Image 1 (cartoon, rainbow, N blue to C red):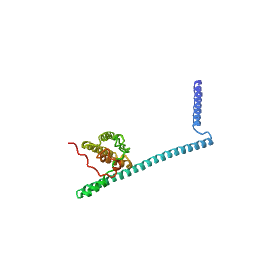
Image 2 (image 1 turned 45 degrees about the vertical axis):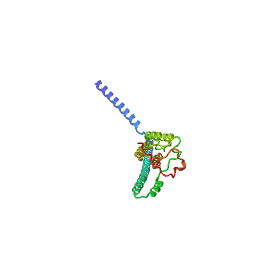
Image 3 (image 1 turned 45 degrees about the horizontal axis):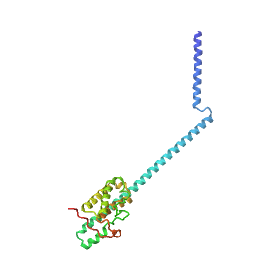
Length: 233
């Protein structure tokens, strides 16, 4: 009988302890008063509003970045389009000129040569005394280094001996055409305001190779184009 009574007392005590622990845990996680509950609810609202503002700011930032990239892509596409259009127009005019040559008189050919001949390179672009070339910034890039070195060697030789022979002239022509082909392969990467002058510089470099290094600068804008040197036999 005493053992049963003792077990009952211990069971009641254990239930009381568990009940107190459960109440303490509930009181820790929950508001004990109405005012505390209102304060906690308000803090949750403020925290949620702050998170919403952060997310909106991040979304606005991402939108502006995407918009800026879109505008940049559109500008680059427009520049490339007009650069390609100019090149096609130049090629068309050159083709028409070739077709008309068969019908032209010597006088017409002479005038056409004067009108369509490229301008010779100026001393600030090519030093006739040393053969040093001042390259446009696009042609100064690494992809064109090998062609630049070969052309600089040819014009250094021209400065030393006075003019190029036939084989040297053909080498300048072939090397420059290779350089321009490489330049054209990167046309979509370059702004048109940089690409067009670089392309024109290559054409003028080929034209310049026809002349002697000692030709006066004053004659470089309107001289009659000389015949290219004949290859060595």
